[in-house]
Length: 128
Picture 1 (cartoon, rainbow, N blue to C red):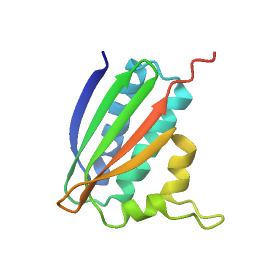
Picture 2: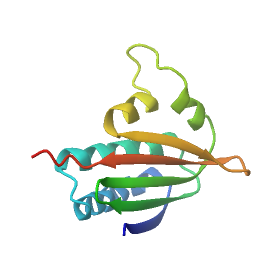
Picture 3: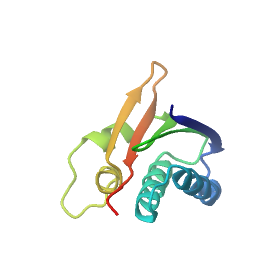
Picture 4: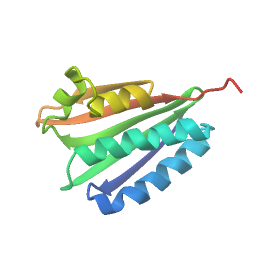
């Protein structure tokens, strides 16, 4: 059975280090290696940075045998869904390019109130 952890935090950037610390602890609990932990932290930080600074966000972590599935939301749509779906311009460090690099999969879940939840999945590299 997978373990689940949920936290709620303000979107304000001053809470970024706190969220990073919590994500690190959750990654440790899921036996992710340092590189996988750092990748997950970076993906979440970048997503939250692009989500703005107003409001609160819920981060839900499902720890399984193969890694961590994270759901982040609700987020004001404000172009995030488009940013995750449109092709990258060469040389541009976009949210999509960052997530393509640091997580194994991601997706957007839309709700009827115009907000979204972003799903990230990071698999553990067990190939010591």
